[in-house]
Length: 492
Image (tube, rainbow, N blue to C red; front, top):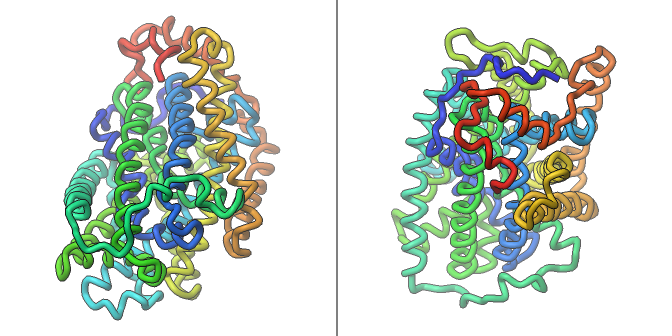
């Protein structure tokens, strides 16, 4: 596997604040709440706050795993590289493939609400027209495709504007919800209790949906080759981003439980935030939250495009997929072939989604299927971190807990949720989730037989990697170590 740092992407484009914004935008707070609240309520009822809480704890273990792995291997492929170099190249490829497939499905799952929300601002009756919503959503998707194609600097500027306005609206409504007096249901601390779930399978179903809420923060790792001091910045930004969206998710989920009736939540579907906004601020509130969701949806389309195209770029560079995917545009320093490929695949899926039924049914199956793939590749990354740092875990209690036990808890939780939820998902969700993973076996076998160096990896070991970083002198712009060399073994 290649380990050089001259990889063609533009270095030092993102700073710490930019990367935190990307982590928050990747999780898409407003979009996740709008698209998933009714789905989560359908799965666990009023236990939504509990599902988000108990998924956040192991999810932080995965964030810690990514932070530690990113300190010893700066790679746009992230888990694809780390899992391949610690566990097995086959698992590494499937880890990268799971991200690519899930992100491509999300292009449609994310763009459909963008289309219906745009239509709802014009005429609410048009929002239920799935073919029209797909066409408008495809327009938003193509716009973000051009922004991502235009380079990382343009992408960052667009993201700062979209996410900034979204956060201002969401925070204003959190404060308004606290002050609101009209209540459908009294607040109940039991919403955070484990016994609110309908057995292990019900808990697992809720956990998969909650994983979809948080998913996207790992875009910071896929952007590591374009980030200043990325060995430190990518992991720190992910931690801050997940902590911030956790608070937002809990606040809005509790507000929905308190201010809306069960029937209102079920019937609202992806418009649940608009209904909540109308309850808090009649006449204007619903429209404002629709704007927030629209901005969030478009923003997360951008970060997802970044994530999937950087993953495909790394796979093309390693010759585990066509080498053309590793090509970089001379002017914009973007993996333009990967961008165009994802765009073409997503547009084909838009056509299929337009004939698939209602927006809500497409969203429900897509969220569950993506949750399966998220649990798969996050679970493998948690194990990879423990394996890579195994020689350092017993050097301190901090290392053992933050570098071993917590990532292992996160990994075990994700893989348990993956297996346990199989009996709960619809046939369509299973076909998309498991079928997408199995589809990856085809290019795996083809390029393994062609002899890609990826399948003969240099093992990733923290002790050797840290020693090499210290001995290599001043760091290159894409993989600099700076003043943090001596703290890698103990940070996080």
